[in-house]
Amino acid sequence: MDSAATKQENPPCIMVIFGAAGDLTKRKLIPALYNLKKSNLLSDNFAVIGVARAEFDTAEFRRRLRDDMDEFATEEIDSPSWDWLAERLYYLTGDFGDEETFARLKVELERIDQERQANGNYFFYLAAAPQYFAPVVQQLGTAGLTGEAENLWRRVVIEKPFGRDLESARKLNRDIKQVLNEGQIYRIDHYLGKETVQNILIFRFGNTIFEPVWNRRYIDCVQITAAEKVGVEQRGGYYDQAGALRDMVPNHLLQLVTLTAMEPPISFEADAVRDEQTKILHAIQRPSPEEAAKRVARGQYGAGVIDGEKVPAYRDEPNVARDSMTETFIALKLLIDNWRWADVPFYLRTGKHLAARDTEIAIQFKRPPFVPFRKTSIDRLTTNRLVMHIQPDEGISLRFGAKVPGSVMHIGSVDMNFDYEDYFGKTSSTGYERLLHDCMVGDATLFQRADQVEAGWAVVEPIQQAWSVMPPPNFPNYEAGSWGPKEADELLGCDNQKWEATHDITEKQRY
Ligand code: BG6
Image 1: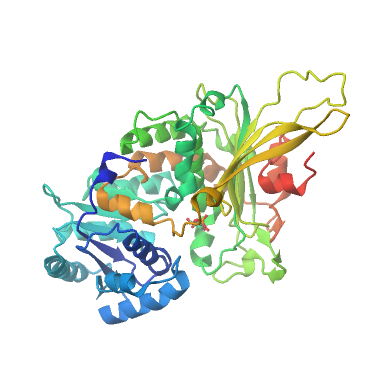
Image 2: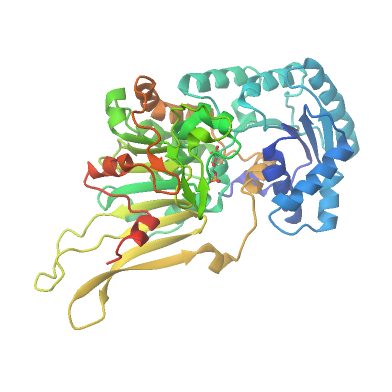
């Protein structure tokens, strides 16, 4: 995804982080900036201003982040690189709802801009709670901080969740567009920062051998799994209002669907790629709420055992309602109405506190049309299966049938494996490096456009409508540490299919 923009030098700029005392800043953003510095991808004329309500000063901000780096850095810290970054970190205490914060921010920006020669280029990173997204953008506009000029840019990065449903996403888009033009808005989905996710496009469009079979003629179904071993941890307050559908589907899982299903873009320019992704979102069938309810299964974890340790039920997690009806697992079936994919089901599932962490896209091919080994003991052939392993074991594997050595004709399933680490060594990254750098150089390919976000919400809208009048009957319905509720298996069973992700296969007889 090398666009013209990514070939620019690292431009001088100032990053302003709203929510600088929060989790994202210490866990991802600062370690990512550190990694960028190590890779020489930050300009000498770079600086960060952290804004948050917490009462401390720049010296304390730097000290705290240095301590956090011991926990969250992705590689050993070398002092000169950290010192380089630390002296470019500044802090401003302020309330995001208060106009005066933005007046002070403006003064501070001008001062640091002078000191660091950042050429007036600023990007504002909203790592704050979603209710602040629109008000902060509004205040930035009022303070005169969003106007661009020739050779001077102003951008805003917005974290998820971008709305709660189609209506609220539309409203948020309308609100921020009163101040910003679309080219200034960088809606982030951290899945697109993952190497393995970006590699889907290289794999499909940088090779000739896969694309000819990448369609309904050869593919039986596509199965996308994003299984998490962790529970809701300390995020009960947010999660109980969100649930697995909102938290994972319209954003991360649909990114995987669009990259897997899209047509080849005419270039890797931002809009060429995003146009093709958006077309897929528009082509996904919108069933009636009644029909949507039949294409989805939901679950909530009860108490169980993970890695030998007892873990509590979701309803006993901190900040979760004791009678919560929020789903922590969802499986669904999507159909894409276009020539390439008509009648090929895309099955998606994601959940918390499952038996393993495993995100993968499995392309399940059809059986060969004819079994020529009639006079042998082979009456049923295995199917080919191509798996893009997104995390934690990053790679690609292809399953095919091979003759089991011996005088009797037997067929076995074997795997051809590509493991990232074997070829490219271990890379340490938070997943945010590429996204931050792209924002600095003005490449929006890996960020979501307004219409894309809205189209994602439109895909899940029928499910939201169905569920709004149909509470789950039997929560909790899966044990923590299991592979989710039986309803997820039944969903595929109705189509004579079964989950065929790596763990499903390895748990069963291979051949
Ligand atoms: C976040 C969700 O967007 O993605 C979390 O809010 C989820 O609930 C996380 O755990 C998964 O991301 P990753 O990179 O760990 O797969």
